[in-house]
Length: 261
Image (cartoon, rainbow, N blue to C red; front, side, top):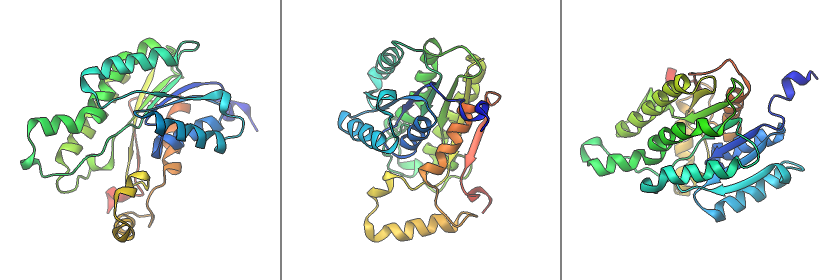
């Protein structure tokens, strides 16, 4: 097999924020399997420890290429300093080649008419302010080359919001705008966004078991693939954006065709 294709991420330094579960976990797993050195970050040590254990069990001989570090993005007042501390720690021996941001927090969907300013600000602290602050800091901790990349995460609700999703759609649109702006500001480092549709991650665990099958069925019916996405499938988009050094300012949509239904 031609090594120019299968060795692109070999020994690359990758940081995945939100890497302890869901899409981020599978991005970390995928990158490890391609020979990358991966740090996953999450807000809780116990969750990180469990994720590192799972990754070591999944990817053979990965323990020397994997670590986990806590970074609390829920604390708005200290978010910048927490991110800076993480970046400094991760790059003690090697600058980063890639950063992937899949971090999120639980959001209760409510009609925009019921939202006060504080509610609106809270809904964006991880998904919008996190990428903005990270983008402002990241350039000093990354290799200044077109092979380096940052990949953010928005969502299909930006293009096709459901009822009550106004604030979430607004922040998702903002994240996509941040990525395009940073693609210019940080060049030659590349900056892109992945926009997932419905993906069956651990977040679905919050749905009562008696309702889960009907919820999944409703998502399947809205797709052209008659399926709900898996985090393993989504990882392909993030790995593509890491590997393709001609992709920047791009939006990759992975939604089973749901925007066409």
